[in-house]
Image 1 (cartoon, rainbow, N blue to C red):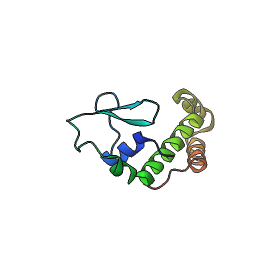
Image 2: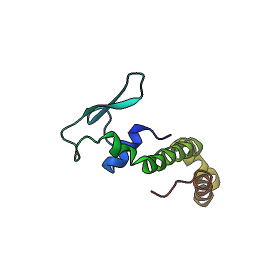
Image 3: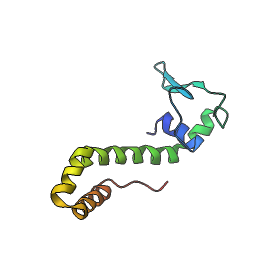
Image 4: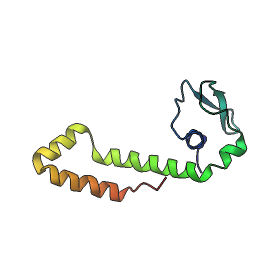
Length: 108
């Protein structure tokens, strides 16, 4: 199930600053918007507006999971440089592409 942060991201068409622009809370009944900055380009959304974005939010969430899995498998920058040094740039590119294929992103 998609999380409210991804619904908000879909609503704004960007990832907001969840420390300064939007603050979420959960009082045991589920997450909700506790604070919505007046400086945001859109007014605070209604629950109905957010629920209408469920499909887009699911795609954003799945893509975030794919990116996290990719980053984990790529390893640190140091290990990637070591890979390139030992096996060459073309081997590294092939490895990166195989990881992207293993963890594909959905069309947004």
